[in-house]
Image (cartoon, rainbow, N blue to C red; front, side, top):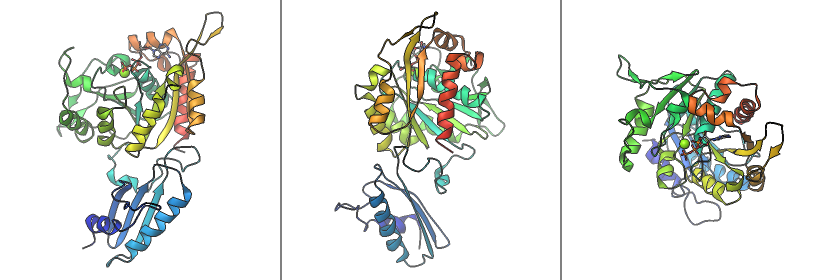
Length: 348
Ligand SMILES: Nc1ncnc2c1ncn2[C@@H]1O[C@H](COP(=O)(O)OP(=O)(O)OP(=O)(O)O)[C@@H](O)[C@H]1O
Ligand SMILES: [Mg+2]
């Protein structure tokens, strides 16, 4: 019988070029499917090496064609980081593990807390909406879910006749949050399996409808909790938010390593709190502006833009009206719109 198992078993005989280990044990085989003798799979490489890619494609095709019942083989090789790689989100076979209706699921991560990750998630969501997309936000911050406040959403999800959760929305953006599942302000100690189950519910039991983008706000850091979240959510891409001074400390690298471990393509870096503009227009570079862009160039991943420090950004967050919504044509709002355009461009 030709099925996922027989295909994977056959692929165990294919070695990663230059290694004695097989490609299955490397964990790079994804989306294996068989239908009427047609086999498809994707290989997700963690480094962009064209020779390795070509070799792997050839070896896999050859091995699979030799199997009984196989009539056709389609092997797609994806290489993640760097602008020189194929655009993300264009894998025709990625649709298999997809959540119906959710076109692109993007995680927003940061190496450290307090760098403005949630602020960026919220404003980016509203900016994508402003640009005409259908957008949702998923607040997975188990430590301090702050997105409901920043989005000005006080109501919790309602339940549909089909017993699905209907996410509340504001500013045209739908939202689900860990915060909706907590009682009051009591901190909750989440156990690993509980987190995984809850996150799965966010996909299976929530009526998102059709969304062009679902942005996922991860908890700060790049440890095991964040990693397992990345594994639970079917991500199409990851964004890393950094401050200029943090960028130089290798924290960005850790974020990238986290996404690479779970084969999530990196969309790029946002440098937040880039610089401060005084009321008379003078630029003050508190944290030494440009660290994010420099680091992005150094490690060859796209730079999505910089967001200066603006009092309006913090005020907007506190008021529940993101600055992109209240003043899209002011510098602060424009900065986020530029980032949103850069993100959109990564998918075109
Ligand atoms: N560009 C900015 N200009 C002014 N204030 C900002 C900016 N970015 C973030 N802030 C403010 O900094 C604080 C921290 O931001 P935020 O909560 O978004 O960070 P975070 O990385 O999500 O933090 P946590 O690690 O707690 O989740 C908030 O009060 C926010 O309003
Ligand atoms: Mg946050």
